[in-house]
Image (tube, rainbow, N blue to C red; front, side, top):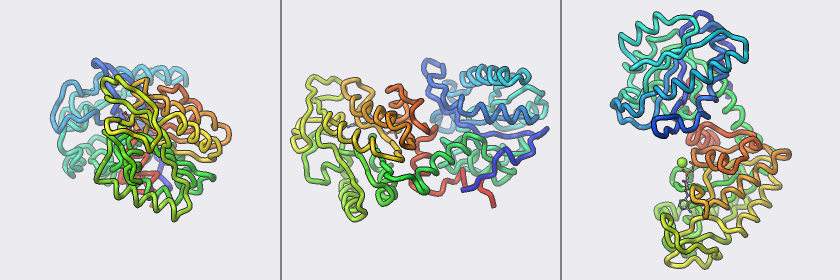
Length: 405
Ligand code: ADP
Ligand code: MG
């Protein structure tokens, strides 16, 4: 996939509408994790250096097509300004000020954008306050396009969505990829196209239905597939074992069975947990024990992979040359059920020298932080759904519009 990038654009004196993914977690009205903001700084700084008038836009949370004061981008603007200032200072560039607007389209916004001064970066208000954004409404896309001469996408986390700011507007302006999108695509391409073998895929998490198609595409390509998390329960059931009161997606049991046969016929080693950490309750665990996979009791809830499983997964990861991980091995948010997830994170970190490692997915990335190994993972994706769909070989609408003719 060859993208048009900002390096090829003449940015000097141009107004550049830049879609970023500032959909960050908030806590008590503050940005709780600024990873996604940090990830866009190189692109913004480059465009400023090239003399562009930068107008940023993003969504935040799920405001359901109306103004929600808690989901305004005001706290994001503060963090952005601080990060941009220190970047500009480091590069010996001029001062910068972030001007946060109260809306993202309309007369008032247009007039502020027309009067934009050098050194100002404009941040539009939450795109999803308007129904037109997610509906990819042509009129809303036009209203956005009126604000600029050029469109840049640096919002990797939303490229799998065909929304007005990620897809529609790109048909109305010359469109380019920013550095983050370029870098994410390059990193994930190494997993999809001619990965060094063995390719080991580690899948877990809660929702098998979202991820099953990914496995369908990956099983034939991978040499090893390691399954954990609630996803493993559905596979366990497909094998005829008891799953007690564990989270199982009944509608996917047949699909899981089909995937097991697909692994067989593809010569892919698909490993399921041989032991589990089980409990009587996820909210208030009184009983926590490790049992063998064929011994999960009626009252048991599988909450993590067991130590034996973690050991064998660690061994497989040790031999990997390429590894992609999505979805925690257990309910890692609780310390008692975090060991399996931490073991996988550490196993990936320990092959840093011999393998190319990629982690994608909202909770998976926070599990990597939780284990404190982010510096020993080659690529930590800012996109969850986007990275999964990319790895599965889907055509992503927000990337297609940036492709070279
Ligand atoms: P990601 O965001 O990395 O793609 P998911 O959203 O699919 O991952 O799943 C993450 C969630 O899965 C975590 O919050 C974790 O608590 C939950 N989870 C993992 N294992 C289990 C399990 N055995 N039972 C219930 N929930 C689980
Ligand atoms: Mg998630």
